Length: 69
Image (tube, rainbow, N blue to C red; front, top):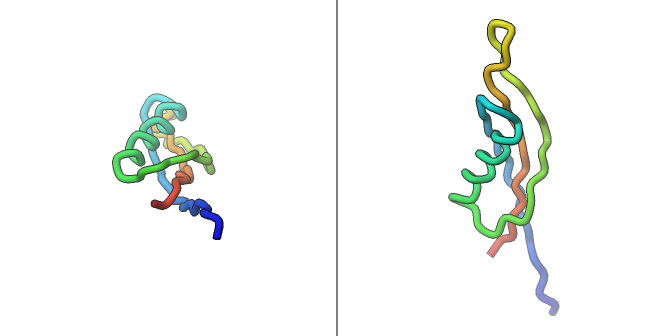
């Protein structure tokens, strides 16, 4: 029987007051604290929270893909 790999996907929502790029980095850094063997991420959605005609927060919804041990 050939050994194969099995992956799992979990969804993460992260935010930043600065940028979408920073929100992605924050989400990734947080995911690495509890998930091992991360192989990639897929960004599903970009959103902003606005108040008083200004962007207050950048949000991303992403899938984190990791290999099960």
